[in-house]
Image (cartoon, rainbow, N blue to C red; front, side, top):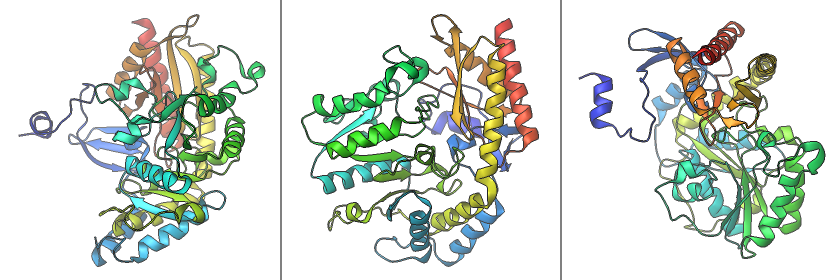
Length: 427
């Protein structure tokens, strides 16, 4: 029985939109090959995970060396060198005075843990999140996810959650423009805290760049205004860097673009270039509020994953992030130029190599170009380029390749996307 048949008969896949699957066999850098030897340029990186590239030998060697010594011992019952070293490294590379980390396995686990910590520290129990956000598929993380498409059929969800407007200038909730609104979306956070809940808000959670929502990039001063509100209200700021962290935005963490220090940062995906690992980090006075028995993870802080993460961070710091920032800016500029002559493109946005191209069916009404996005994604697949689709209504092309992607490969990606748009327009 082949892999496709095994997936059909034995793997739960009903939650994935039906497309012709690629049977991934091996990869190298920004390239992925299927079992038949077909080569693809990977512009989705396993949903923004393999930031340092497929088959990065530096990372593989570090993981193998650790695996030869110790694979598992429970890193909270025993102390392991790679775990301690990674925690120290995260304290060095995160903004401000964030210092103590807890390690888990996936992004949802990191956010659930951050919520538990925020409750312990604050003595409060309510949360504010953003419309169009996505924070994971566990109970608490879906409860603070502002996208009904991800939540349908799973409710009722956790009480004590309210949502503030999305900082989404292209589709402003107030139908105004940044030069007129005085950052209304940020100012609304104060009203949500004061009016929508019971006065027990412990934390506000937001993605610095909103991935699943369609690479929504908040205005430059958004988080400064929000952080001032949060400080005035005694509310913690949790930055969800699960997708935007580890160089994806052109900086180690996307919140660095906005010049504010979160109280807690959650991270996963790109932290270890594909090895399962997540973390949340907090200031010492917040981290130390955990009490005996409050939290644990059997597999959290796996020694092999931590060794891989250390090697991945070192690799990214060696000029890779800076180079990717330029690649992303150049690629985005080319898309913006294409937008001038391609009416299917409503908006181009993003930071670094986290780029969204929002497609529209009608330039006047901005009707969602869901069908166009699906067509272009399939066109790219058939022409050996792998991209993602996101947004509340599946109308945004997501370009998130490994940060090591070459200029020539990006040229091919651009041409393929442009050709796909042209082909849809003709159809």
